[in-house]
Amino acid sequence: MTTICVFCGSSMGNNPLYQKAAKAVANFFVEHNIRLVYGGAKVGLMNILADTLLENNKEVIGIMPGLLVDKEVAHEGITTLIQVDSMSERKLKMVEMSDGFIALPGGFGTFDELSEVLIYNQLRVMDKPVGILNTAGYFDKMLEFFDHSVKEGFVRAEHRNNLIVSENIETLFHLMQKYSPVTMGKWIEDIKTEAHQRS
Ligand code: AMP
Figure 1 (cartoon, protein in one colour):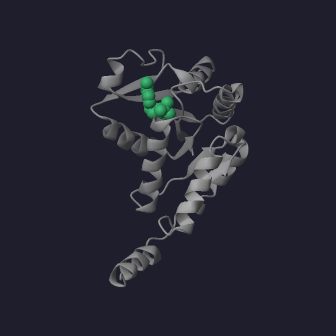
Figure 2: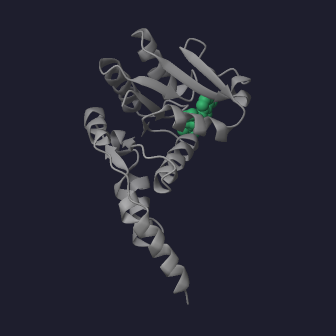
Figure 3: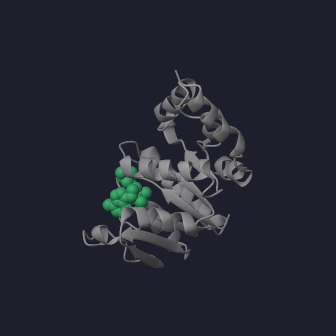
């Protein structure tokens, strides 16, 4: 993996550990010569990531819809800022340009981007690792809910288990390198059978 897309907060979060984690991820990218793809902003955790890489002369690619560029949140110092027409086009471009995806703590924007790449993997539109950096247990409740969804029969266990989680960027990256996609045949047949058997 030489290009990784990071989804993360446009805010800093209340716990200083979140900023520390963004910095640790950026330093890891610097050490391993990994190119960053991200939302292109100069705010929140996104800004910490981008600035740390730029200070170390590393490549940073921001992808941003025009509506956000107009709001003047774009980071003008990044290597490349790609302007797109919509939020959907932005996510497609992120998927196209990256070898893997990491979500750091964030809000709805981060959740949306994370869900998008998870469903892309599930439908085999792409086969790329998706990881969560679970700093200070930020994602614990979301992961609990995912487990609940498995229990209730709306998420397949193999898809839940294919989401890579660690508090530590070295471990996360190592696990992401070993990613293998879930084959589609079995579960798609199961949901078709279930549809035939409905009461
Ligand atoms: P959030 O987690 O809600 O703060 O949203 C952050 C995520 O959504 C990032 O990964 C961005 O790609 C995107 N995003 C949300 N707000 C902005 C913004 N002001 N500028 C750039 N990207 C944003």
